[in-house]
Amino acid sequence: MSNAFIAFQKNDESRCIVEAIIEDNPGAMVVDQPSMVKIDVPNRLVIKRETVEEKIGRSFDLQELQLHLITISGHLDETDDEFTLSWNS
Amino acid sequence: MDMKVAKKLGLKERYSLMTRDLAWDTTFHKMEDVFPQTTYEGIKIHDWDKWEDPFRLTMDAYWKYQSEKERKLYAILDGFNQNNGHLSVTDARYINVLKLFLGSTPPLELMAARGFSMMGRQMNGAGPRVACQMQAVDEYRHFQTQIHSISNYNKYYNGMDEFAHQQSRMWYLSDGKSFFDDAITAGPFEFMVAIGFAFEYVLTNILFVPFISGAAYNGDMAAMTVGFSAQSDEARHMTLGLECIKFMLEQDPDNLPIVQRWIDKWTWRGTRKLASVGMMMDYMLPKRIMSFKEAWEMYVEDNGGSLFKDLARYGITIPKCFSQTIEEKEHVSHQSWIGFYMKPEATPFHTWIPTPDEMDWLSEKYPNTFDQYYRPVLEYLDQQEKAGNRFNNKTAPMNCQVCVSTMKFNEPGDPMEMCFRESIYNGEKFHTCSDHCKEIFDNEPEKYVQTFISSHQVLQGNCEPDGTDVNVPDFKPGQNMLDYWKLDKRALGDFNGSEDQKNFAQWREQATKN
Image 1: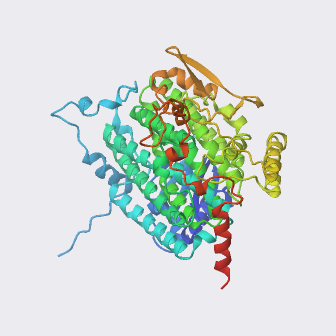
Image 2: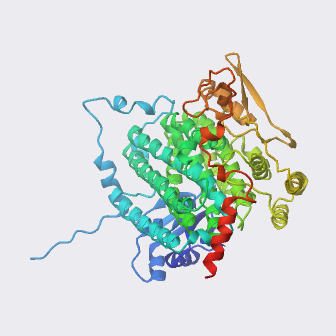
Image 3: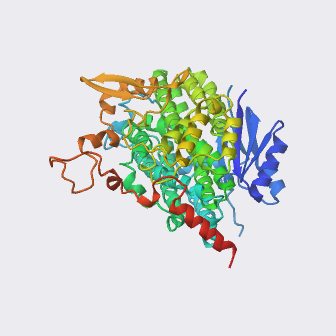
């Protein structure tokens, strides 16, 4: 099984995004590195707008992820409500 | 009167309206005359509308988020520079990694900007055209921001000011230059595999992720902000490369062997380019977060492996070179550093022998190779330096005709034997560094015989400063290389005893006392 992953620059907004990922993706593994954080999830990683909004305390457009993003792994599908990375394997 | 407020459009509808709906098929001229480049490589496309950018990024959103990224980046850069940030990096050796980074990366970003501007014109479909235009603007932004982030260092340290002149002339910058020259002179689909897949997926995932995290660990906020800001665009670029590969494979089964050959070729070319990034991580960062080998395993072996497994459903197989790249991950950073150490008068950055602590770290990270093959060489070079006999190889290197790396890699399975391959084309002999580069050469010899290799051309009198008369009877080729390269002589030699080392120590002293 392959891991889908995403990495962010460490800041207050990405802290909330990472909390949302942990809540919505059982099996998420968080790797803390200098000034960045990487989250691996087997096969499929999803970021839900609603959960991020709950953590961050304001409305959130998933395209705002681009400001903090460092890298991704997996095929991407982005809608208004979900940002999904997945592998077919 | 009641106002009826229209509901905001969803992401998919906005993307569709603002990309595909703004494009049209030509009627005065045939589409194939307007877009002539997308057929000659043999790739068959039946429906361009099947290509969709998964980020569904429209131009208005693009400008909004990119301008926000720029504001953040320049705020950090100003703060770092105003606060004498260059004196807060771990030690002065670190600055040499920036000299190598500046010399090699921004000119390649500029080439990428040119390449994607061409793709934005050449691709038939509106989806890839818009995504390529955005990528062209991104690449131009990376080129500019990288130079801005390093320009403050240039005020204080030697050897940074002639990178643009050196790009086409320096022996060790030729590997990156040839990578982009090869890509940009190929057709549009091969360019997308070369840059979108090999450069973004294989290379930048190491250069701009663990290496930049390492720059942050060494206190360099300027390189950190510029690296991560660039990489936030690269996530989009990798997606575009991946999308292009899937698109070609889904459009026609005849595309499979062509795409497979490109993936084989460019995985290897990307790997060769990474050898110097390995040495930046293992030897040039005074504080290290992970070894090149660990980064390779995470971002290339596992992440690349995931991609190849996924593409297996289209019939793609793991690139032929993949097993060799895995064997080489324990060697290339050491071979590169020792190679550069041996040429102290041919680079605008300094080299040095790692401290005993650093050698122990390397032993721990490379238990299968470091103590056996590389520690004895480094310790011998160290003894020689202490005895006043610092190693200095003054001869020009021999470079591979394809990747233009210097010949320094080992024979597969035998770390003590250097690897050389040769091909004959039109009665002339051409040398390559490996089976994979030889295969690339043999497949398109008429392309690679044209490679400009300065360390070979110098022998024909083609690498001289302007105004040199190569026809005088006592002309000796290669006598004027430093002037040809415009090398700052203060930037040459070992780090120990360099002007940078003295200045940094003195300025740091002043920064902490009255």
